[in-house]
Figure (cartoon, rainbow, N blue to C red):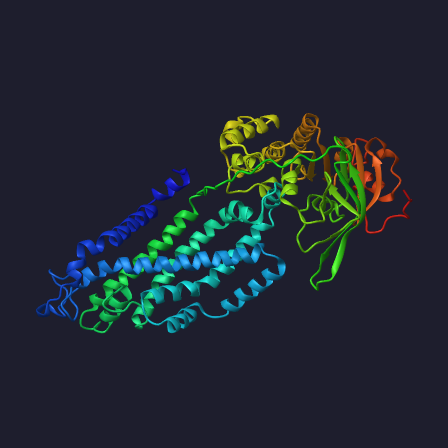
Length: 570
């Protein structure tokens, strides 16, 4: 058992909640068997009797024992509440996920539909559906279930949209997973805890709603009965026998508490869901020869608040040869990461990407990707993101994330993929790899997480490794270790590396060739060994901002302003 879950269950609140859940389950299963006859046996002589030794809650108009009827009604009340909850959760989550992954026009229509439905009060919708379908148990369950769909659709859409922008989703897209697989493997596990808590709250709300509908005569009909109907019967003579109404009412309150507390226990237990993985055949190999990646006249624009396209990358052109290390350097907002994301095909669908040539291993990255193309990208293109804590899926162990490419594209078994994961972690210098593959990302240090990201690229046979500021959040010692791992990885696999950074000193010491970007354009291209011969004022300004042993410590470090001296043509 999960240690966190065990700790929660053995706490006082956990013990009480567990005991309540077990009692509730026993009443649902055994209640009608034990007290069914007593609940239906009439005794005219004992009708409307008050609480006593023979009848703790008294009797009703036909002399039936109210306590027995309350216990037997547990099955009907709980099951219809859970049924309505299942309808709300499944219908709402499916609608919300569809509003996240479908094409943009369909997403907007679904989002608008959800907003319209949310404009109506939930209980009003339940009453509306009840009036349409008529009174009855099934009708009431459908009414409450359908009324709850908009709430869970909005919740599912919001949670899924927040997850879809994470780097590990982009990594899954690179690995060749389709939208359905991404949702099932990466989105749903991460939105499951809040959905579970809200589902338990929904179950409690559904129970209250059913009680209200039955109280109004729109729910369970005679001869069936639930707590709401028993409460209505007891309320009619509350001044004569208050316990007749207190019993069903107390059962409703206690059951609602059990539902909500179960959700809290699950949410705080740190439970990791099990993810089912599928196998796929290995993609066909691409032809060697020529540049690994080629970009000519790349333009990338994004819509602003008014819908007008604003160009962020303008006319960028370069190529990457096998085994070459290219660095893109520039200040924040210069278009470095956008360029690398365009090459990987990971920009938001709203982005407008145009280029005379934008290819990786002969694949046109501006055209829709085929299944074969996705297989090539999943095995030959690797990405190391800036923040591995957000790039790695927090709900999956390191081993599960490492083995994904091997299982999906390599057709490897789980045991074979795990052995390759251990080998990959060993190759990037992570100690005790057999233990690390069982840990979650937050259990590793920043340097280890970054090495795991590199190890994920080694699970296939990468031809190009895109590193988007992989050392920004690391101290200089860990930076050196990560760069050493990247260099060893390149020597072992022969992969080309595209390194994005704002640190020109780091770029010059690691790369063969440097591209300097500013305001979405490449202002200068030069060999790293010739950095001292830089001619462009912006490149010289970047170099001047890097302190060295001869810098005057009595003067502040130089700052690049908005205006530079007259630029020298390259």
